[in-house]
Length: 330
Figure 1 (cartoon, rainbow, N blue to C red):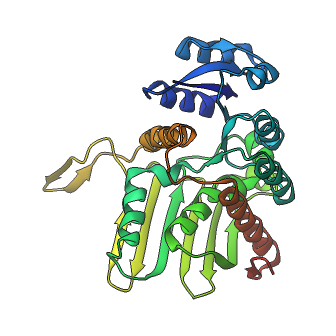
Figure 2 (figure 1 turned 90 degrees about the horizontal axis):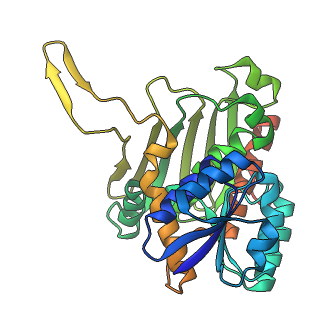
């Protein structure tokens, strides 16, 4: 049984705790959160004890930690956990500064610790199947990836102020997915954006509607569109066009039932929240992490994947500010 320490018992921390609860080979053994109500709710869910970060990292029975604290704590806590010899699962991003991420990853490398970054969409069954079909050669050589990601509504403005903005907080998932599907590193980025849903977002210096066009050195392209407003639900789609055909993953609904009548076709609305849409992905993600900690040879998003996605987000933001394409590493 793998004993895990949970750092952060907010919304995403509880999501991970629920995923661990469903696994036969792992459990949440200790929980850190400075907010009493959050810690108590997570303890009631898991039966774990409450402890400080220092107590969790000093406990020899705890073999791994899940870091689900605010972003500005991630890098420091990764370094502390790495030096304590714990395997680490950390929510994205590692930090909002690429330079700080590089420093952190040096510590991880020096300690030989295993670090997995929480790009849960790689573990969504539909998106994973798309990548598997690409790897099998079903559609031939990849030529064009199209990723659509639109939220039902924007998060609170106070969250946006500290999140790093749309490119670093929302589109970063799509940057990782683009790399996952393209199979090549991105060489250049061109981004556009606007505020179309809420003037309060503009006051933070962010955008709520954006596109990014990515191009690899060989010419493969990915086009990403994001919006903070989709009145019809949580819009998550992927399409990959190749030399022999196309593979796509469409939106999820509660059921696949549709009704036809003289007035036309109707279907159930899209799922309305990322925790519903990606519930299975979160379970698969934590299953992979636990299997990795237990010594299985499994593929998982590394700290370097987290860094590369952040570098693409930084490039997109620079492109938006300058109106020019940005070369990666240039």
